[in-house]
Length: 190
Ligand code: VGL
Ligand code: ZN
Image (cartoon, rainbow, N blue to C red; front, side):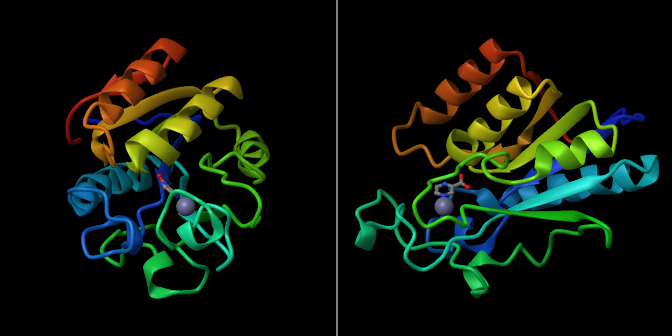
């Protein structure tokens, strides 16, 4: 069982249609984390712990897109169905939505890049983050490393994240880097 306590928050990274099978930049089995996250959301609600959900939220001319010289297919364009959060993700009504990747000239994998998330977490007296979402080897990795640098304690929910794995070892490498930086990896469903 998750042990949410005062000072905790749940951070859900980029659980959007484009990162799930059928989307523009699908993460293998990305959709399977939704059911896991829904259990953590229910536990957060019960413990009165705030929930934050980020969206990769790009302008149509974003530098990460292949037509603009970047490595990725066009994905998560603002206000398109692909950029919408998965409709089966049961977010609380007062979940805080954080949009990132808005600057066309900045990749911004991290949820902390050019957003007010750190400030908002500070205002809410959050000390420890439980993190899940997509993709493990990009935005989850960057967000977890930044959260640790910002001074938060961070737990990664291992079965609530999946890797793109362009190289098959990318997910494992990201886990190693996060572990070295101080993340606590917790295993199974709550
Ligand atoms: C992401 C690639 C490009 C992610 C975002 O959310 O992990 N990956 N943009
Ligand atoms: Zn992106």
